[in-house]
Length: 77
Image (cartoon, rainbow, N blue to C red):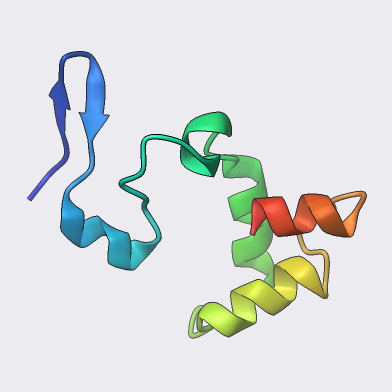
């Protein structure tokens, strides 16, 4: 199933929540850009076989995204 446009907004299919998408109408998914440069940094910092905990550790403990504060790391994570 692909996402569709409805009244000018993107509709996220419910099964996409397993990949980290949110169905809420507020929060980080709406207030932030997709941060593609940071995704590239993150993917370069962890192996392809990494699990969720590895990504979290790379962001929070390893500062793979180069954020200036721990708070900004938490928000990005």
